[in-house]
Length: 424
Image (cartoon, rainbow, N blue to C red):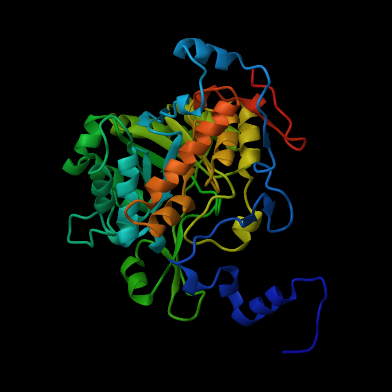
């Protein structure tokens, strides 16, 4: 190592790349399965010192509250936060809260007992849950002797076994490799999924991308033996040089017409399942959402650039994709889809209420759900959600409103985030 220096320049990062080569484009591989990666934030400040535009918004209660008066008349007494009704229709399902559990796929962090614990608790809560991509191609479906705790069927049974009548639902995500494995066909014809199907609580989610790495497919780190088992299905790259291999999914190719036809195909082939579409935070997110809604999607999910993941190149969470606030701004200007779901660093009531006020129907818990379940596999997510529900009730009632769908853009303010008139 020379004594050459460059004050004010990211010298150590340059030296790390000079030492490690291509592996330095990723976090240390030893962190895979233990660390949940996503855009870094601290309070309402980003790691670069700039404020997150969604966190920078202020929730702005009015002085005059006609909806509170209407609630008072309805109840025959002064209403309080306990009178806020949080039950919400989400993509054809009925949820106990305006909240769902975001897609958690084949990443090691969501596998094993933790994935099952999270599924069970989401079921108890009656929250819709998305089962993410690549589980079947990597770990199997669960009917051929595969490890039940890692297979898709294990999560499905753990969730459905706890689900109260009339609440919740499962959305099964499919990417390119999942389509090759005919994941949706397996689920649609499985007796274990029949109760969900018959009660209208099964959806299939077409994935166009994700917030943590828009434009790329799913990525994980595999040891040599695991890589050998899936080498005929995935792209493998020996970037780490220590026996561990980068496994990459293909992102899929979409145009407006391909998206329309895919949704029509889903509705034709699986008429009893709901249709969800997941979009990355692309610059044309409003156009893609419009196409999906017009083609008949029951829900459109937008994952902001703050979205977490099991694994991503370091340049992506820091620099690629629109922040969730900007996605919401563009969607509001164009007219959002009837059921817009959003995710991206959701963990407390204020960020959720701001998203709902800006046009979302519900918000997704990803890293927060995993961390809560990891803290207590029996009830961590349940207690976390109790806190979130209380915050939602307090904030919504402070605005003089008593249901999430009563929120609107007048309920938030920031000089950096002007209110945009609704389309039309």
